[in-house]
Amino acid sequence: MSAPKRFFVKNISGETELTGDGFRHAKNVLRLSEGDEVTVFDGGGAEYAAIISRVSKNTMTLHVLERRACARDPKADLYLLVGALKGDKTELVVQKATELGVKKIGVFSSRYCAAYVNGNKLERFRRVAGEAAKQCLRATVPEIEYFETLSAALSSAENYRYKLFACEFAECSDVSLSEVRESCALAVGSEGGFTREEFEEAKAMGFAGITLGKRILRAETAAISLLSLAAYFTGELQ
Image (tube, rainbow, N blue to C red; front, top):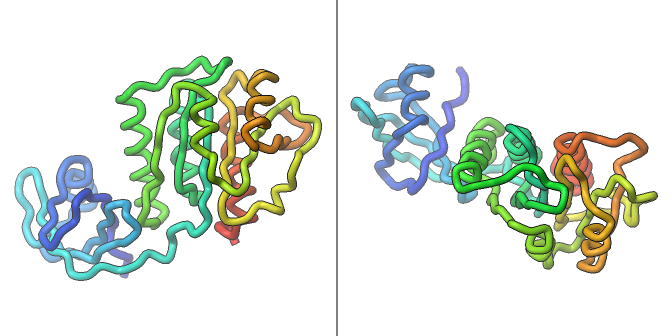
C-alpha cells in the first residue's frame, strides 16, 4: 500500500480546507475522495495525518487525526545566497536547494547580475520551495528573501559560524569544506560572477573565499554543487 499523498496547507486546524492547486491535483489527478487518508504540513516543522471528510466543487475538507514530528527535516542550518539568474534558473536552484536541506535562501542583485526579481517572482520561488518540500518529504519550507544589494545579502549572514564565498578568480580556498559544521552561509554569484571589489567586501564581512575547482561552472551548477558539498559535510546527505 502506498504512503498517503502529501499536501502543503496553511493554517492547519482540526478541520482544514484544501483549495486551489492542491485541491485540483488531489481531485482531478490523484482522484482522491471521501475517506482517503492524506498527510498535510504547513512548513512549520510538523506533519499531520488527516482523512478527507467532504469534497465539494472547489474544496476538500480534511479532518486532522494527529500531529507528528518529521524525521526528514534538516538539522544543519544551511543558508544559500544566490545571485538572481536568468529565465527559470533561480527556480531550479530553489527547488534543488530545498531537496538538499537548505533552511533559508537569499536571492540578491549584484554588479554583474542581469536578471531581476519582483513580487510575483518571489512568490513563485516560494511556491516552488513548497512543492519541493512536499516532494522530498520534509515538513519545513525554506524561508526565501530578496535583497536589492549584495551588501544587504551578506549582512543577513552575520551570525553564521561558517561563511563561504564562491569566486571564480579565487586561486585557492581559504577554508576546507570538510571543516564545515552545523551553521553555514554560502554565497554564489549570478551568470556574470562577482567583481574583485565585491570579493574584497565579502572577505571584510567575514566570508572565506572558496574555489570549486579548475573549471568554470554555470551559476546554477555552482550553487547546487557547493550546497551539496556543505550538506554532505554537515551530515544532511549521510
